Picture (spheres, one colour):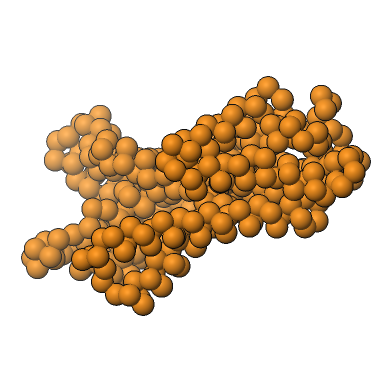
Length: 365
């Protein structure tokens, strides 16, 4: 059980890592800023959801297990746990023994399993106790139906007991979790308050600069991987099996790398020449570069290329130059820790401001 809990937590954290940048973009576009408290609760929801799926659906049954006769996989008697407890006491078991029995422990675990759901949805989505309880009922019903149908007929057979008592216990857990959340301070920023402040300019902080850089890195990575994947698929469709022609495959890999790098370089240039001149990441976090020099657009282009462009050019060179490209990016990231203005802005004399009206600068520009 401990191993299963650790595995589900790791999977949940992995999903959270994958979803971090999309949710970061969502926060900035909806709230105009990053909310750490809401991010933490979203991660908690992903980890909890993964654990819930793991505990209720896994491990899957084997063909050998399904080949054996099984009964009692559907239990519609809501009083069975209580009748079992009474039968234990009537057989001579003390009430303390009954209270510590597996039957009671199983009921308690089913209640505890859904308490985090009530707590999370109260803090994250501000659901009332009634709606949180109904959500728990709906999710529990979905789980029981999934178990009854063998994962909606995708498993070799039905292998978990669909129990109506679990339905009530899970619903009770969601209710208790929602009530417990009422007794604690609100631990997540109010989404409505954040949304109402979206149009207001905010300081250019280090975290915000890093958020834009992270989004840019992911966006260029997606372009690189997407172009490489399309070219690779096209190559193998046209050429066919090249396992015997290693030299041609190596040469084509170099072509893929070059084309993907050039496409990324083009993305950097296009964003620098269109609109405010901000990169995609900067636009998504409401940042805007400003140049007061003559030929300002040219300087905005130079600013865009001085870090990303140089790094891409070095990566497309030899392996040794690629290391310099990584080091150059590392320097740009570290530079923000000392001056939010950033390395590219410092080298080109540009400034960075909030893209919304009446935006203040960082104060150290």
